[in-house]
Image (tube, rainbow, N blue to C red; front, side, top):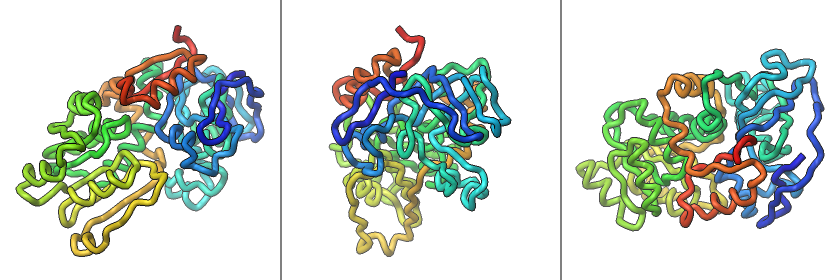
Length: 348
């Protein structure tokens, strides 16, 4: 089969690799019908995630059809159309029993495209299939469903829910990439008073407005002053960091009010300075976290009912065999205007 393989920092290619097979009774083999590229994949290619070994197939988001299951799989069977979650869960360890699947100690957590071969391939082996794939309603389009593998659960759980967004709050989302835009959409579920989106790219600020942001501002135009003006000097109750660079994290610390929450979602490849000399009196809560995907069934139901604008984030579509071109478009988002790219087996 063909798959997109990591060959070390700066190098990846669409290669011929061995077909995956069942290794454990809890495994499922999924024929990939739709897959995406994540910003985390770009971090891996930059060398920011050193535990990814050369030769690993990348990707952790997909929709497909069950091709084969191990003898211990009971919730899906060959022919079922499923969502492949970015997080695998053994279901037995200390953290899984608390629904903290991202911290799984039994061989799960973020494994796909990280510690084992991932989803940017024609077929993928998914461990712990009973908890790691989700049957899809027949009416749900692949482009809607695939964004629930990672982007929307991450934005909702690590951004909105960790940030404790509530009615009437001022919420600042720093970074209007796919996760930031999903944070805008899912923050609206809690009736905040105002959502402010910050980014450098005008096209992404336009997308933030379409997703429901009340105000947008370029990162070059003193967003801290705008937040201060809009909140009568108090600052935002919630600041969501959705980029993963020191400057955007520090911007969040400047716009949050005393007693507020900073929810860091972005993947950081470099250390960020924590200015405790300024923060210690502000009673600010800072959260980080890997998504658990415990919210995926709920988000799937909402999407099937037309309550989440998932497919609006898809800016480019490709055939699966155009993976290298799709990577170029996604990595060059400043020029291409790419938000989320989806590659489909059936696309031309």
